[in-house]
Image (cartoon, rainbow, N blue to C red):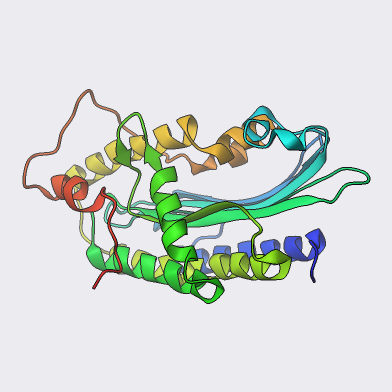
Amino acid sequence: MSTPNPAAIKAWLLDLQARIVAALEEVDGNPFLRDSWERPEGGGGISRLIEEGNVLERGGVNFSHVTGKSLPPSAMASRPELAGRAWEAMGVSLVIHPRNPYAPTVHMNVRFFEATAEGQEPVWWFGGGMDLTPHYGFEEDARHFHQTCFDAVAPYGDELHPRFKKWCDEYFFLKHRKEPRGVGGIFFDDFNELGFEQSYAMVRSVGDSFIDAYLPILKRRIDTAYGERERDFQAYRRGRYVEFNLVWDRGTHFGLQSGGRTEAILMSLPPIVKWRYDWHPQPGSEEARLYSDFLVHRDWLEK
């Protein structure tokens, strides 16, 4: 398969969604809601959502495949040469918010985009990645997550992981707070440099590695004892997650501007959130350690 085959990509994405949901259902003990939807402008998707589970306070694993005759402003701003082309975009995107404050929030997505015009070569690329957002930091969790990300892309080029890690650090950064969203991971967009077959293989490796990256961490933390202090700090830190997704995230902007399903797009937002004016953690506390030791750009794989 040397040229894009959207049907094959779609089949893999649907299988990936099903495998991830099954793994999370096994941990939580409750089923995910299944909600199929259609988009009047073209395409549709399947939203898989859990709320008030035993382990997962809120989580969504969404598949979407949408089409259009012209690109929304968020896409045209970076790729004006695609004006007038028909397009299709498909992907799996997930955000998991566990109830236990010691279990980190996680995000992952893998996606494919193609724009076509009669008499012209199609323009296509892949995007995706995953990142971890702890409320209370554990070095072994961060190292495990980053090692799995490294292993996923290493077979496709030595330069990919450092580039994708740096891209993740820079993308998931709250510019108005001058603060990373979490401990990072990998992120890439507009990726087609390996040719279709190898680019697609790399993206499959990233998506298929998510369960190995996150489930061991989730299982390790879900039985940790916590109280109101930890829940209060979790809600405060979730506020940063909301700020990033609504203010800076390109995927959110693209989804809303392209007429995507609002309920599916905003499933990334946590259910309980707090904001405070100019709040700072007590010096020397575990909450302060999150800022000093984890919300910094560092090489988590350094020996």
